[in-house]
Length: 199
Image 1 (cartoon, rainbow, N blue to C red):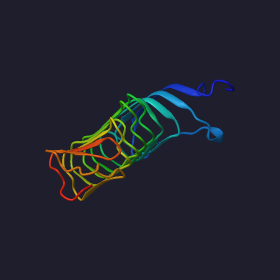
Image 2 (cartoon, rainbow, N blue to C red):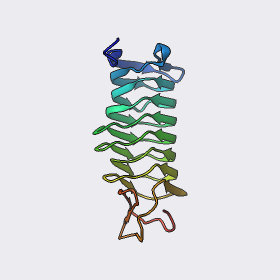
Image 3 (cartoon, one colour):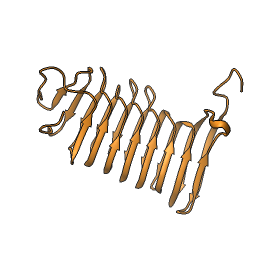
Image 4 (cartoon, rainbow, N blue to C red):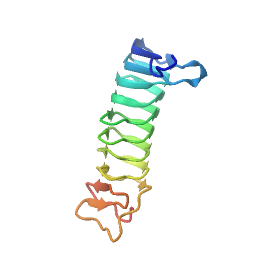
C-alpha cells in the first residue's frame, strides 16, 4: 500500500498436522517486502518451508525439516528439532534466536545491537554476518564463520571442532587473556577452551 510499506502483512500463520511431505511457502508478487506477526508449526515433519517475509515470532518444536528459509527476525525465533538447511535473515535489535537440535548447515544474517543468538544443538557448519550483539555456541560444530565482530559484539564458543573464522583480526598486540581475545573491530571472542592458532 503506497505510503504504508509494511501494511502488506499477516498477523498470524499457524500450521498443524505437518507431515514429511508438507511444503509451506509464503511469497509476495513482485518480491515486495512483507511480514508475519507470528508463525507456529506443529506436526511430525515438514519438507520445505520458505517464508519470504520478516517474522515477529517463529516457533517450531520437534518437527523435522529439510529446508527452512525465513526473512528477518524481529522478536524471537525458537527452533527445537532436527533439520538439514536453515537460512534466516538479519536478527534485528533486541531479537533472539534459539536453536536446539541437529542442523547440518545454518546461515544467519547480521546480529544487530542487543540481539542474541544461541546455537545449543549440534550444528555441522554455521555462517553468520557481522556481530554487534551476542552470538553463543554451546555445543560442538565442525566449521563456523562470522563476519566482523564490532564494539558491543561478543562471540562465545563452547568448543571448536575443525575451525572457527571471523573477518575481524585480533586487536594489535592482543593475546588470549584467560578465555578472551580482543578483536580489532572492537568486539571480543570468548572460548571455554581457547583455540590455539585461531584468529
